[in-house]
Amino acid sequence: HLAVNRVSIEGQLECGALIFIPKRAPFDMFENRKLKNNIKLYVKRVFIMENCEELMPEYLNFIKGVVDSEDLPLNISREMLQQSKLLKVIRKTLVKKCVEL
Image (tube, rainbow, N blue to C red; front, top):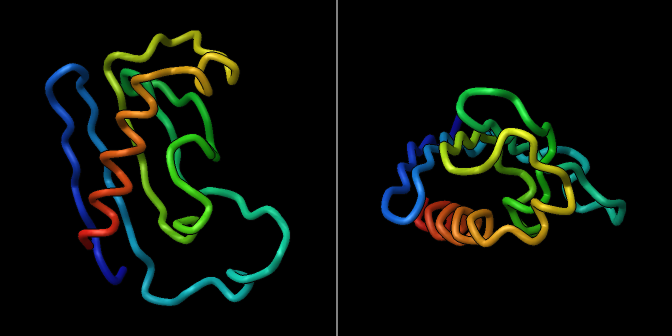
C-alpha cells in the first residue's frame, strides 16, 4: 500500500477507521459507470455493510478501508444511514484525513 492511516474519532461519537491507499490505481478508475466504494462498515465489531457509499465521496472511490463505530445502532437500515448525522460526522473526518495523506 502507498499509505496507511489509523483514524480515531472521539468526542460526540466513538469511531475507529483504518484507511489504505493502494500503490496502483485501479485499471477502470475513470469509467463512467457507478463504481463501488471499498469502505466496509462495522458497528461494535459486527459487520453491517460492504460498500457504504455514505462514507466516502465518489472522487475518493479508490481508497479502501474499514470503519468501526460504537455509537450507531446494530439494526440500522439503509434509509437510517442516509439520514444519520453521526455518519455525516464520520464522513467529514474520513475525507479530511484522506486528503491529508
